[in-house]
Length: 99
Image 1 (cartoon, helix red, strand yellow):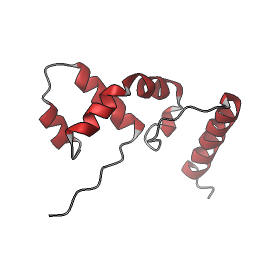
Image 2 (cartoon, one colour):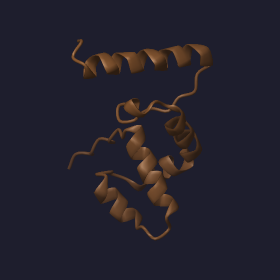
Image 3 (tube, helix red, strand yellow):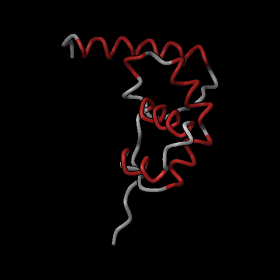
C-alpha cells in the first residue's frame, strides 16, 4: 500500500477548518473526511499555526484567498506589499481575459 501525499490546502480552506476546530462540537474525524485530509498531524499543524493563518487571511485580498496556500512572513514587508498588489493586478487581468 503506497503512502498518500499530503494535500495542499488553500488559505481559505485552512481558515474554514480552523473556525470549525474552534467549535468544539465537531469531530476531527469528520473534518478529515470532509476536506480529504490524510492525517491528524495536518490538522494539528493547522491548529498550531492558526494565529498566522488567521492574520494572513484577514490581510490578504479576497480574490487571492483561494489561490494562496502558504503562509510566510517576509523580511522585507514593503516588497511583500508590492508583490501582493501585483498579484491582484495579475488576477484581475486573467479575470477580464487579458492573458
